[in-house]
Every structure is written in C-alpha cells, then in structure tokens.
Amino acid sequence: MNSTSTLKQLIAHPISSELFQPFGQVIFPSADGAAYGPQDAQLQLSNGTPRFYIMRLDAKGRQFHTITRHQQCTQCLGSLGGQDWLMAVAPPSEGKPNPDEIVAFQIPGNCFINLKMGTWHAGPYFEQAAIDFYNLELSDTNITDHETCNLKASYGLEFEILGSQS
Image (tube, rainbow, N blue to C red):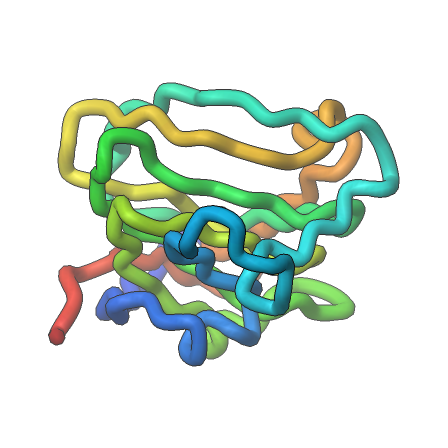
C-alpha cells in the first residue's frame, strides 16, 4: 500500500448528453405526455427490487481517493431543490478503473443522471452544508453490489474536483 499519494486535479465539465454518454445518460425535463424514447432513462433494475428514496448528504469537500461501481443495476441520482452538484466518473471496465479515464461533471439541479451498469463514480460533491438527493437503485445495492476501488492504495492517487471552465 502506498503511504504517499499524488493529488490529481479534475476540472468539472458542464454536463451534456454527449459528454456523459460513455457513463450513462443525462435526463432533462420533457413535455408532459411526450412518448417514451431514447431521451428517457433506460433503466436496468430487473436483478432485484427497485428502491427509490431520498437521501440527505452532508458536504464532504471535493477530494476523494475511492471510487465505486454497481454492476447489477443502473443508478439514477438527482438533487432536490434545484441544487447544483459535482460527480466524478469513469467508464465501466473489466477490472479496476483507469485513473486517466476519471472525469468530473458539474450537474445542474434541473436534471438527473442515470449511470450505466458498472460505471465507476465518486460523489455527489457540493458546497452547500447538505443537499437532499433522490436515488433509484436496487434495495440491496449498497449491501451486495457495492465494489469500491481505493485509488490511493492501488495507484498512489487522490483526486480533487475543481470548478468548471465554461
């Protein structure tokens, strides 16, 4: 295990459907009554009982050295109250994530993300003292489908998300 680490800074990109595609979907508001289509969340929740809940998260800064994935379901996350937030992600992989593929996004409060099965993620991160998030995953995701990679131990790296450059 590495006792020292290097801090790698990530600039948070303003999220867009195109930029986020390798990791999942960004779902923006649509007109009531619009037909179901590719702009809607493509959910994969058939491996268990879906769980839709609101979680209150406290601010934890913008630095991280662990990243997690769920391989049995997609995961939808969005903030309540229109709050902006940050998330770091890496594409699904056979083994540990490639640290060079970790990117960060700034996510506005008028949309939510749907993470592909296996997408590595760290966050949400934000400046407010606390934010409520809605979360859709399986009822046992955090017990049976929660693989975490310690980036400090595996690669000698820690990450910090910086503000976006619009």
